[in-house]
Length: 585
Image (cartoon, rainbow, N blue to C red; front, side, top):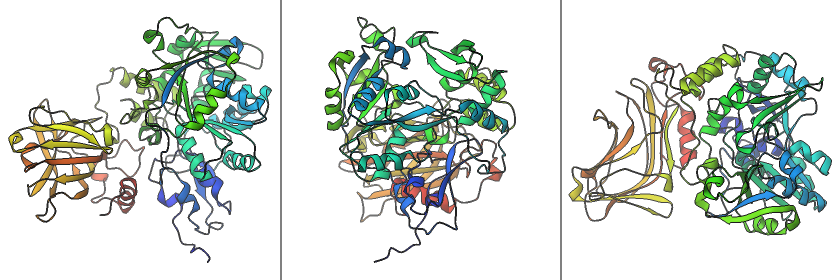
């Protein structure tokens, strides 16, 4: 039977600011109706040719931002400290050479390796990208042809593997690499794919099945700024466009005190320490973080990669006996396939492979459940200025905010987003208990807690006069007729009732998907519950997800006034919340 062709496309379904540019939708489209374009800040996003689209719904189905792939790997993976034996490979690697050893092993077996590489004509691409100096604020996407400076490519020999080494702190252009990988896998070739967690999730969504010959490595990443930001930085900083650029060079600096190395066509090279590199400072202090990275859904355990690799920051303090001068990699073994692959690596290529406690990973990559990438206080300033002024001025102004030199109150779009075991309330133990059961955070109270309060801190305080949307997915068991949610300022002891949920007499332990739009009366720093409303035997609220976001149609918008906000939540945001949290209103 022919499938009905009236389904939603990815363009209509993905929430504003949530597209990661993974390319799953573009590669799955049988009619080639989707292609990459750039939004007004240079991030790669899909564009649709309506004349070619037959609304089959495939792009919508494979988009990980709409339909998050099922997590099948370990929630408590084994953690290893890794260092390659080959000193030349260590020098070429960002940390301990884990990727290099793994990639060479796959090539030796006749396989292929996919990862991010500088484009061969990257210097001319830099020039073209930088010449688009000011993104058009009125245009949602760019109509100019894309000229990416870095993209995912597939290599099948050791000579070309050098292209994939080293970190590139910008968004990779994914192109048609997913389709190329699928073709190789169908031919029985082994493929090692390395990318950010969102890219690995996108690949798995696109393939829709696991292949024995596919090994996925996801990175302990922080975030990926737009290539346009990098291009503008380079043009403004260097009179002569570089022929090569290393974000992390160990000859100019050691692993933990690395510097940028820039090469020019004349043969001249310079080393730029991080303290003198505006782009690196802006990256490290997270002022360029986009909404899709702030609200990343792919980085926490369990991971999508069979293996996870990254810098093992802090290992020198945890285990002082280790030689860390040239770098140590952290390797998470997330799946059985990943374990078998790691054990198959040639022992004579490895100097160090030691199991370490998982807690040693710390906050690297924000990998633990409940952790979230946090943007800088200057992020909002950067995005408000980058379309109006030079990269240097936008970055330096944002960095001044980060350093506390500008005390103007700056608030991000998201004030709170926590799920499951990442939900942690503060309270007096004699009145409350919190337990994690089947992935939900259960908050128990009783009649004795009538005057007690339980609070969860906001990531960023609300701004007086601005509009917000509070969404809570929970199950409630109480004899009370209603449960109220408050915002509070713990220092000044101000509070505002923002949501009341009536509890029907016939449904004292029902599931609830709550959503409300309101205007903040003051600056508040916490969400609060009162114990007086959890009454009866074994009264509780089981939280699955809590989200508080500032209400704006544009996820990048920073200058909207309360008067410019719509009087009611748009249908698009309602649809997004319903799909994001699986709620029926």
